Image (tube, helix red, strand yellow):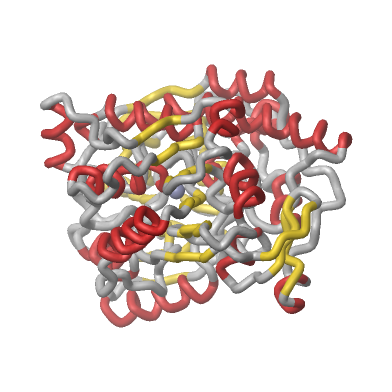
Length: 488
Ligand SMILES: [Zn+2]
């Protein structure tokens, strides 16, 4: 009896019909790989999914490839040693610099959470009113899951290997890979695989988009495209149902800044340390150069964000052309005279007493933990506070509740009326909108045989699938977790 012809397959282990938990298993005739090993984020139920390891044999993996250093793509890498994987973790140079920090601080945070949970001091937040929102965010009663310990994070950090962009690298028998710039955050890449197949001189190509930034990114260098369309494209669709072209985000931003300045308000902006913080700082730097801040201080309350900013400045070739030129002239694109960085809890508390107009950028971007929660607790019941949301908010967390119209909230045990003004600017995104995503696919040479849409809500990927089917001859699929895609 002849064995069935060995095939190339991609099994989806997360981020299918949802926006977190990116993880794909690639099996070829001679190799076994993992692309991304991200955390599920959001509700407690989502978080608890992190404890369940994907159903695969980690011991047989040849390598783990990482698209970028966002937690929903890399947050579970620290689990690898316990799961039996001790091989290389491959990433671009900036991502390789970030990963150890992300993993070790994540391990520290997991331990801190456990201690806080035992002591009853864990950060908590929920909506109290109106009633229909209150029921949507249950307060945490269980200790948060511990996914990995410090020593495992350090072990993985030591196994991270940096590879350059656009250069093919043999990584397992019959498999080469390369990173293509994805213009999403510093170091973010799409991952292209070239896999030898029996009976064909032309290798099969599989492309994992990772997160795709806007086509015209004001901060980062443009995307890189392959010289050949892939046989299978596994593609994110986070903003597949959104179009930002009509919105002039900068004018909206300036209007908020001017009002903050003129009315002596305190503007709080939840930001993620990697990506959103730098995008916002670039906007503030522009506002500063146009004389709009007029001395109004902007505090960046995130040590991780400050370090990520340094990384942007250290990789000018990965920045947008004019930003690159400015960098080469010695101008830091993310710095301006009104910017102050707060690197410790003490420094963070030092701004509590400020009574004049100021801006505080702090994590977490979901507004449910970290220094932003402390700042929000202190000021949310004051009418001269405003909270500016610029990013996607996960259902079940405080940021989502505030944007949905919460009037009373509980933060770390204190019940507070929401008197702060809640602002939202859409379109300041590290992810391309549906026009960008379509453009990104269309710029590939030739047509993609199969496109599997992941990393987007069911609505987002459903709408984007309809657009793709209308415009391209590709077979567009919407896989679920556990589904396997075959490369023909
Ligand atoms: Zn990302």
